[in-house]
Structure formats: C-alpha cells, structure tokens
Length: 469
Image 1 (tube, one colour):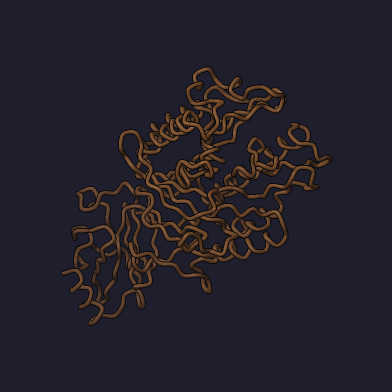
Image 2: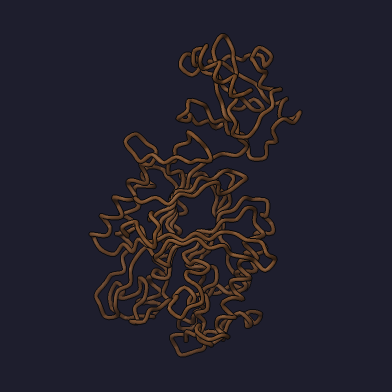
C-alpha cells in the first residue's frame, strides 16, 4: 500500500521538496536529515528512539516552510502512521507530496586505509592523491559510492582512519631523520577540511619491534646521530614522535568531530605504553589499538615499556561499562593473516616475547607478576609459542565479543582478507584486513586498497565496500 501511495502521489501531485519544505520535528527539535538520490529525505532520529510507541507519537510534530501544521491535517497523520525503519513514508499536505525515510540512529561513512609507509617524496605525492580523493568523496566532482542496504545514500568521508605503519624502516647506519613530515603532509587534507582523521601506530612506527635486517620502525638515526636504542638518541625518540603524531590526529579529530577521546592503559602502569584509546562517534564506539593491544615488553635503560595483560584487564573493565555501545575495533594487526605458518609474520608479533631488553635483560622480568602465563621465551614456531599466542588471541576475542555488534578492521598483512574470529564462548565476529594504500588495488583476487564502511548509530557496521583510490 505504501508503494502504491507513493506512486500515486508522485504521479498526481507536485513534488513537495520542489515548492515547499516539510520538516519532521521530534520533541520540538530538528533532526539530522539527508537528501537521498531517490528524492526522499532521510530523517535520522536518536538511536534510542522506539518507533510506534505512545511516547514516540506524542513527540512528533511537523512544520511546512517553518510554520507549524497540525498532525491531523496531514495524510496520513505522521504521529499515528506505522513507521518502519528505512521504508519510504509519503505524506500529503496542501496538494503536495513529501517523501521520507525514517531511521533510528544516524548513518555515517568511515573510510579506512593502512600501511602507507610514507618515507619519500614520491610516496607522499602518491598518497596525497589518494587522500584528496577520499576527502572529496560524495562531493561535486568527487567519487560516488552507494550502498545496497540504504538506496539513494551517497558515501562521504565523515571519518577517516589510517590503521598504522605511517612510515617505513630504514637499514641500520643509513642516514635518515625519521621524520613524520611526509605522512603529515599527505594526510593534512582531512583536518584542513574539518574531516575527523585518526591514525594508529604500526610495527614500523614503534621502537621495540624489529626486522630480520636489524632495522627499526622510525628508529634509525636521531636528530644528531645514528645511534639506536637509546632514550636520548634513536628508538625511544622516534617512538615518542610516532605516538605524539597519533595523539595530534585524534585531538584534531575530536575537535573536527565533536567527540571525546579516552585512553586505556594498564592498571599497574608501565613507564611507557602505546596509548590505546577509545571514542564514541555518532552513536558508535571505536576501540583503537596502537600497533595491537598486546605489546612486547621491553626494557629501555631501565624504563619499562609494555602493554601487557594488565592493559587487557583495563580494556575488559571498560567494555563491561560500555557494553551497550555499538562497537568498531581497529588495530594494525589482524587476528591471523594466513594461519599458523612459520612464514606468517603476524603470528610472530602475537607471540613476540622472546626479545631481550637492550641491556640483555629478559623482557619477561619486567612484567607484572600476574602476567606470566601469557609470556614465554619459546620461539613462535614452537607448539609452546603457538599456544601462548593463541591464549592471547582468545583473551582479546573474549573481550571484543562483550561489546555490541563488534566488527574488527586491520592492516599489516599487505593482503585483503576476511576472517571470522570465534571467542571461547562460540560467539563470532569478522576481522577485515586491507592491503596497503600505496598498492595497485589488486591482491589475491580482491580489488580495493581501502574500506568504505557504512555505519549507523546504535548498530555499528551496516555494509563494507572495498574501494580502490
């Protein structure tokens, strides 16, 4: 009947939006609206609204061109008609038809990319081209992306996130200033256009991660020397530089997006932690891990650095207190890139506890006493090592599924993959990993070097598209 009414109205009446404007108010206040390409107006109510209740009906009022109109003067009466989320409702007043979609919870789009590794002028220019296209998404002359789950809605960059590895490693003893300037320049377009943009730190941005050639992420060199591992010179300096850049982006994003950022660190307190954080944007809570939630313990000249089980305990408590928030989880590391294989570097990072502190001390010795079962000096290729890594994954997965409608996004593996993660209680969620933004956009049969994610307040992820910028 609603479709027949819509067709009749569109065929016999003038389009209301062309000659007059009808506005639906809730409890006397204006609502967020979006004009869809099908000519309807998407009216977005607060996420906790329950349609068709007496309370809901009593709070509906209408204006036409700014003047109040009695609800019973409109056909059908908008206060008593049965509302279905996202279905078209057409109202007639004064010989004109006005078509709406009503929804509880605000829709918005998140653009995610990862692993730009911006360390040269050429890469900076390449990434800048892509970020400019992201910022222009849905604008005049920009890329048009639509979603099957919300016909007529055009994506725009409401929130943009980089999932880590801002910079690239340089070999030991190679002159390199570790500057984040190229990355900052390549992503400046977002803050300049008041688009909330947040980056995470990845393993190439954190001092205590390492590679077979001995190089360090953003750690080779210092402002005055090429000395590694010293707080005054190399690694610690660049780790702080990377993490300060993360803080800069989320502080700017909080200003641009009008939200508050909270940090989640260990309850016991290391001297230095990666600075995991969370924020709520348009009715969805984002849980953000710098590198990943578990972080290798590391003793830097007596300064303890880790994100150990105590950090996960703090995270678990936080999720318990915010379990009704729809959730999106982002981390540089996927839960598993390719399975338990010795070639799969992401598995090494899940274990990654056999690293010795720079003074030769056993990293495990600096951990809180209650963390011992989650750490081992066994190699990640051994059964003991795999079991410890799995124990960590299980603990994190069990925390994730306590949140509402969780979805997980990651980078690092340099492939596109989708993995269903199962917590110990049998509950599943999906981890989607995306290949580097600097790639050609084709990998393992998948196109796309970025995610464009349709989200809804109170719900979380609605639809995910892989897009090549």
